[in-house]
Image (cartoon, rainbow, N blue to C red; front, side, top):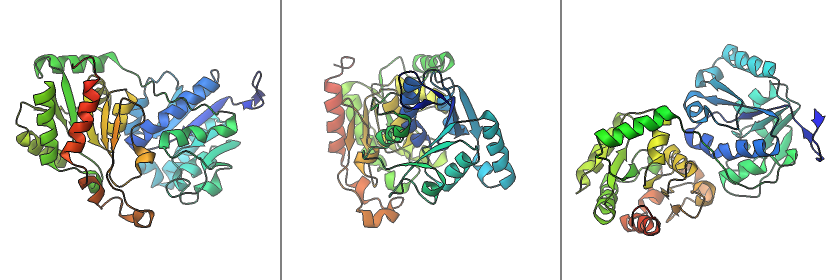
Length: 352
């Protein structure tokens, strides 16, 4: 490594981010990429990620190289070492393990990078044996995932807490949205209702979503667009549409890049702690995020234009129930959400 001008820390020639999945966690890791670029404008930065998350990173101005993998690469030793060999040939000086699992830390290890940043062992970070494989261990003081991802960069001389996402926008995806609005949504301003979630503990009842959709249409004149993905979520979305007393539409089948454009164009986004919710915050769309079992201080939307709602959460000793226990999400009422929406939209110059 060569020394950076005016810096006590060496300037890496190549930095590799390891954050493989899921969509929400990939989005929440993007500020670390932006911070690295601000600190090291000449360094080549790469990211290894699974295919879904790669869609959102393609074309990012702060990213030089994108290595796309799949879950299958971690089920087959042959495929794993093929990926590790590709990354080793790329030649990182530094790896940043934002996943904090055995597979991510081992992948970083086999790149032969001299410096491998990782999290200290905690309730959600530095899991399995990753804290033993990575060799520069950081115990973050902040609670939120975004801020913890920035703190892990401290061994590189980065103490910057500025949160930027800078997710790109592609013309083809903008055109997709414009065509959709003109041909199916009557050119109306719209609100997004995201009904799905990977964990049952993050699912809010269809009748409540329907009441929120009606409120947004009646009070604010917005077209409720109900987002879904897959047959199970489609059934929920259709139930929400039946509950909504005003006109509403189902969201289209689309790619993640197209979804990014749809979210970017919305007046407001309502949903639980999922990838689309975090994507909404990242593209600066006013967001009402319902936080169920996870700590709100860890995953709630950051920023004054957003609202994070949590009425109850699981105590640490019941952490194992976080995928199945619906008590926290069900404690959130329709009035909680419509009140949060009104608080946001009252101050919005586009809807008043």
